[in-house]
Image (tube, rainbow, N blue to C red; front, side, top):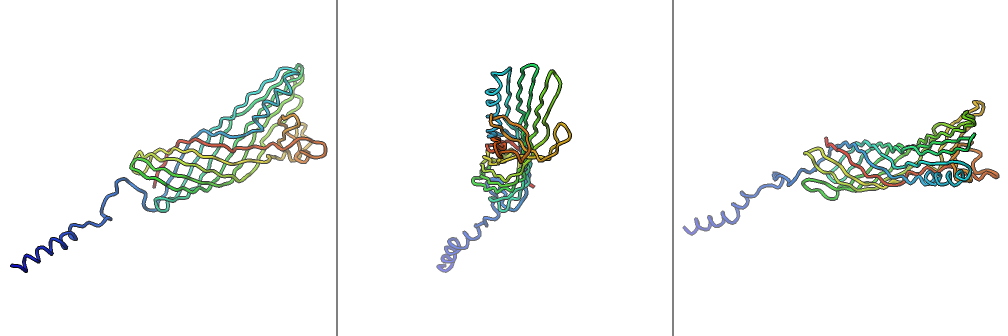
Length: 277
């Protein structure tokens, strides 16, 4: 009888807990985690603030130079929109890499001067396109949302549309028009959150700082006479006004002009949708 009692106690203290134990692998997580390698796609739209200091300053310079000679006005408009598409690979549920393409669309800024019989108008519109490699680190994962930080680096293309017309007695006497382009390396840094709307998809909100500046933009150009072809650059003359002129003339000899710096550095505020495959 004593032996049976001892065996019963032994069974209760040792064997029963082992039989009742369940492997953690069979327990369901509190919320869905991307704990295995998977892929995602993200489409976003957002507001972009871009420095574009020399274009901003040119509006003041235009009125300062022309207001005393006739009627002048400027309409700077530099609040931009950006549209992006991204494909990424989440390696381990925490770290991931992605490739993204983005377009920063800046509205046009216009300038006008009239002192009959002379009339001058000008329009400039900068836009940028990027291809970037990005790193994501998810730092907090909860049932309904995940937060992250991200870093990106990539190649940027700037395309600047510029038109300047000179009228005399209502006749168009001279003009400059075309697209000037440049390439630069840049990068972004930001943070955001994904809000789950389902197991594999949801809404993504983020804010990113951006550095992307172009020291000059150029194009192969033929002037309004059709006789002169050259490498043209957008420049800022000694009065702070944006003009077109041959690349080789800028800043040479007694020329006080300088290349127009097109600086898209600033920040983005984005909203998008994501989907995990």
